[in-house]
Length: 443
Image (cartoon, rainbow, N blue to C red; front, side, top):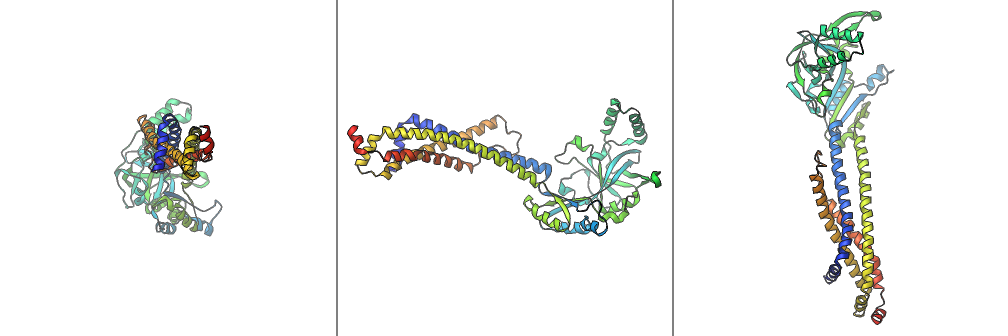
């Protein structure tokens, strides 16, 4: 207590010097605290945006087959129903969404309107687990029902209108008005919910000759999906897809004359696998490799963001440390001057019995108190800067608002305290070496 009282007394007597030293220390401390806090907030926002757009807890699975493979080699690397069942039972897997891209077909309503759509076979019960929500209706496992994507409801035209417009575009491909007319018609929405529709596919006969088109049995639109989260409505209008169950896909393969017929149902184009948490993604991917399947996740993008922000933090902390270094120079100069001015006091302390360590302790304690005061001022300044940034609205659109992270406060104060102590070591040693008799004799 005596040591701290003496140190505080010396600091209080030199108010101007103390203030100048604290300014440098507080700015350095603030720089470190803000660097870590801003980096953490920006990283959290970037990862949240990444999760929305790329789904870090999802894995895309593709068959491991080459274009020239057939027979047993092809079956080994294909995505089959057996493998689908195994993947569903893997640890940490919560949902699996298979995708079988059947064909581009013409969807037509009973009143003669039609549009080209992509026909996809999938597990309709898994749609909700992957962010698909219904705007109208819901799923049905009946074989004569389909689910229409949001874009499938747009651009349904009468065949005569479509043929007439296409003929004009072929005859005059540079006519901007025709393209604008086509785009205008393509934005007209038709209510497909509960409508009965047909799927039609043009086929080619021998030697490329046109063959009669093949149509499906009547199907009923049981549900219409809404725009998926993270996708703009304008983009979704052009994503024309209809979904059917895997069993219905096998039936449509036969009706529409798609290659392979219903036996090809066991081969799927891709899977999307959702896991409990992104930390289990590598474990699940290793299991998928054992099933002779290729997999891809977006964890590498997260790693790239983390590396980028790690560099930002290092750079910002480096700037803060440089400011602290400049502040340490001011403390060094102030303490050295104090040593010279207090030589008589040091000499008296030595004559009264103070040893070298006690004198050094006094000067180091003064430097430590200066560092601690600078750290406390840095904390207050950090909160003030954050309030100013928030008031300016710089982080208004961010999901994670900018705040001073509590675990950064001890780090900032520790750096400031260490800087103060380190700056006071040489002046303390210099003070302890003062020749007491010479100082008193010449004083």
